[in-house]
Image (cartoon, rainbow, N blue to C red; front, side, top):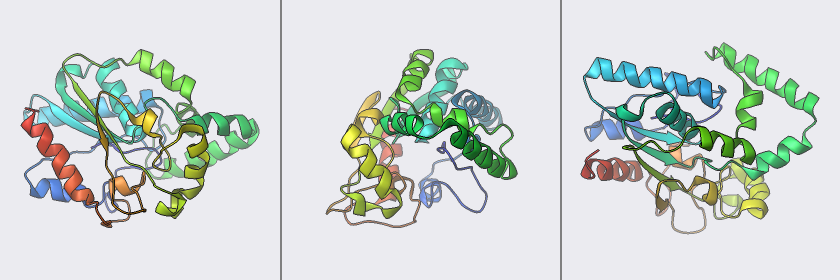
Length: 255
């Protein structure tokens, strides 16, 4: 399981909430990407490659299934297509991944003064270096979400033959769905339409698109909800059941 940007695989706060424990209860063996919080796609791709090779050596398995969220999906795609993992990965499931970039990042990069952006980047790098990042590069990592950067990355990492790619998305139904993401939701909606508070539906569609993970009522399911960030269940949406279904379907497909 591969985390997104601005997070690490910490011992006492699991990025994926209750999900890994539940998957383990159903018989899955869970490992983590352990890539950096604000590393570039290229740098994090190397971390993921090294982790996959280590897992295969330790377990004797021939291949792994990767489930990735947000930027972690870009990191994983790079590792598979560009760093020689294609014959060691059975499937890559992308959840809320900005495969085609984020137009609101285009806008933000145009509005924020370069000097301010660099000072912010230095502050973030310093913070995550203390949390374990060896090569933090917030400045570049965030700019890789721009649409033109995403297009270039996709040219560098075409889908690898023999690897099953599938994608899922969720969406907020209003700014009230998740107050933590209300502002980015409002910025993204006029630019890209339906979104989960950070990633648009259009950008998340990749490979075999499985559709929307949705809740009943007006709340919706945000970018954070989909990884069980708040450790809560919502009306008409059980995040644990969603992942059990994803993994069960992969098993039934032979992966």
